[in-house]
Length: 200
Image 1: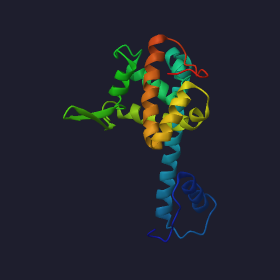
Image 2 (image 1 turned 90 degrees about the horizontal axis):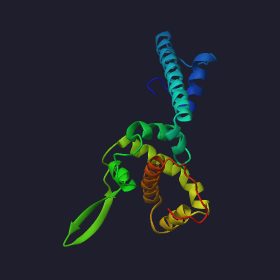
Image 3 (image 1 turned 45 degrees about the vertical axis):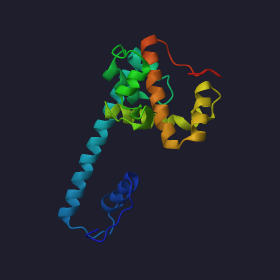
């Protein structure tokens, strides 16, 4: 902006504008020094992209070869990154007595405030592993549309929740449900199956 250049937000638009300015010999008034600095940053950006792709390929290979990660990948909303991160963090889930304990460890259960013998549920506790919690919430947000339109017990529960609560609340509740399913899949050694009309 100091040189009169305004680029729309977003990675793709920035890449296109930089290519137009530097590669295609655009008529942008940049000094040779600024042009060299921008080109150096572009090269560093490309190197980081290559490293990220290499890590993604490594995670995908690990998810294909690890039995627990393969089973977790059968759960809606659990992809390669979620599966490998969960297996690395909790192993077989033996440290947790039940699925709710895993959800509580991830900070996905509501806090309680009790006064006068009347418990009141507040927002989620946000304790535990923030990265895993964030990844499960993103996975739940991605799986929500397809799960809400299916004809399963999980879908019926989700549609009922969406009818009475805000969508973001439903996403977090689905993430907590996914954490419980993750624990069950790891402890049972079975793959996850969405059954028509079955309740979870």
